[in-house]
Length: 382
Image 1 (cartoon, rainbow, N blue to C red):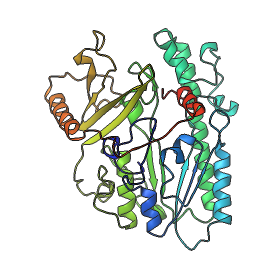
Image 2 (cartoon, rainbow, N blue to C red):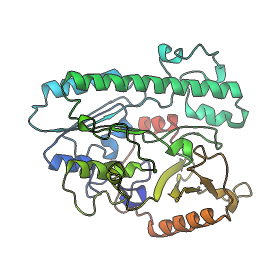
Image 3 (cartoon, rainbow, N blue to C red):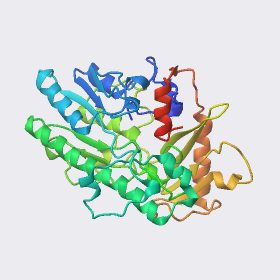
Image 4 (cartoon, helix red, strand yellow):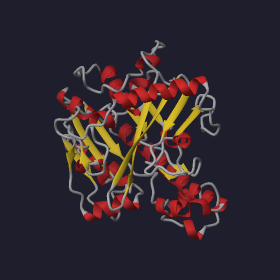
């Protein structure tokens, strides 16, 4: 999202790699060079300087806690308010990035959010704070009541995030920034609750993980109520911002993304195929990483999962999955692999894969602390 490029192109796809200084230009760098004051506030150390996310930001506030209480969402709003009142002169426009954690494991919602939709009988094996590892360990043994309880914990955190976003909008109104602001609400991933056999995120590319909210308020209510019907990608966010605000960017910047302003102007988009990538990590004597990809093409989505170990349980046929996503948003009905749409999608994705050979030469290695590794493990990334 920050670079408008996929991991295959920016070269960062392992947990001990950061975005290199000589790597692709970030959207924050583009805004700063265009004369914007750039500020970021993050609840999580993962979305911070450790991985080079701070590139281009004049100020970057991030929680220093790794295993322990992070910045509360209310702290983010307070920090932004203090920055806007105390540090921002008002002479230059703002590019701001606020990164909240909720909803995210470990799920530990506030009581008022948990009870909003009625009281739910606690399930001891999936009690809050609920870590993804707990669900992974239970897997086939999890009961329907336990799964419903886990979903309720997650939905309660969604409720909190929704209320916090409303408070942020109120803050912008109080500061006199709302009407002229361009505001984006988006998420980097969804969450699996066994729909396709997995839990959490960062392991698969099925709809429950890749279908995320992307809501934009344009200045003065322009295009209010409009919906872009086709699928767009997080890589499209940067080029959309750059085009709308009329900023200069080099030809090679944000090269995997495509502005979706033509859709809002009722123009025909240049291309509609959408690629997604995710890396799965596994600990062991030799740490392993696998890069999975999916492609949405003409209403058909093919998902290519690379197993860590080839065995009788992971034959060739189970590594490719095909769905008619436009008619089957939850991807519950598998499309036959020999159907025309599946064959075209697979051939196209295989061409992408041959062209997008991952290069690690451009990335910079970082030395993670023991506490950071433990944090990644607790969050389900290892």
